Image (tube, one colour):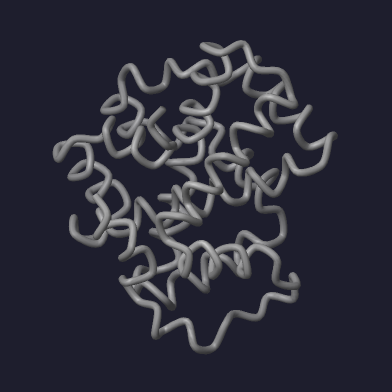
Length: 199
């Protein structure tokens, strides 16, 4: 089965990536580099959330109710109107108070401004949920099944790019005092370079 990242990249053609770049106001090459980073971050955050039974049940319920994968059927239209989506609500639930520190840290590491990163997170959150929801509906997964699926996804991430996975895990697990990592500038666009090399 294709990973969440592979599924997303497979659903996005050059035209879609170009449209995303225009919507969030950054160069296309920066968008191509940022999409895997944001997708991996969201996947890692969701995996953390479902590590507890209550979180797994909440995610499974949300997927069953609102995310059946149909968002993938017309991504160009969704991208044009992503502001109307529930992306902000998803991020609030998944990242909580860590959202702003995460955006600031990734901005420092990638050179992409925090507003653009925030918009990309908002745009991609429902898409990632849609990919997971499509798998849930296809395989009729309960809360435990969704948790197991995401656990396997996290192992794929760790195998593909262990250094990047470790960084993102540390970022998500950091205290929520709003402080960002000082040396993240050295990460830059090579943050998920291992992913891109393995494609």
